Length: 127
Image 1 (spheres, helix red, strand yellow):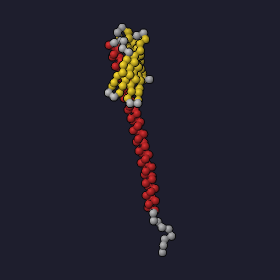
Image 2 (cartoon, helix red, strand yellow):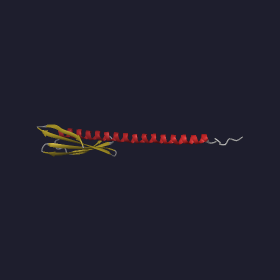
Image 3 (cartoon, rainbow, N blue to C red):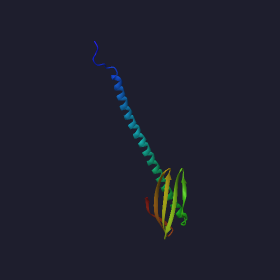
Image 4 (cartoon, one colour):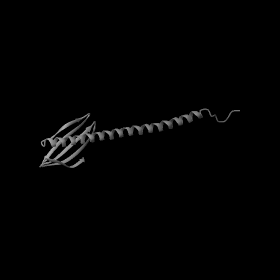
C-alpha cells in the first residue's frame, strides 16, 4: 500500500530555508562590522587631525615667543600636516592651525596677547 503523501524532499526544503536564514543573518552581521570599522577609522583620523592642529598651535606659540614677527608656516608632523597662520592686531595675535590627516581636517584657533614681553593665551577653541 502506498502512502498518499510522499515526504521525499522535506529535509531539503528545511535545509534551504535554514541556509537562507543563515545567509541573511551573517550578511547583516558583516554589514554592521564594516560600518563600525569605517566609523572607527573616521573617528581616529579626526582625532589625529585635531592633534596635528593642536601641535601646530603650540608650535606657533613657541615661535611667537622667540619672534613676534612670526606669520606662520606649514608643519609636517609624520604623515600629517598643520598649516599655521598668524595674524596680528595691536599686540593681539590670532593663531589658526588647520591639522589634516588623509581626507580629514580640524582647525584650532588660539587668541593671544603680547604685553611687556609676556605672551598670554586668552582663548583656545576648535572651529
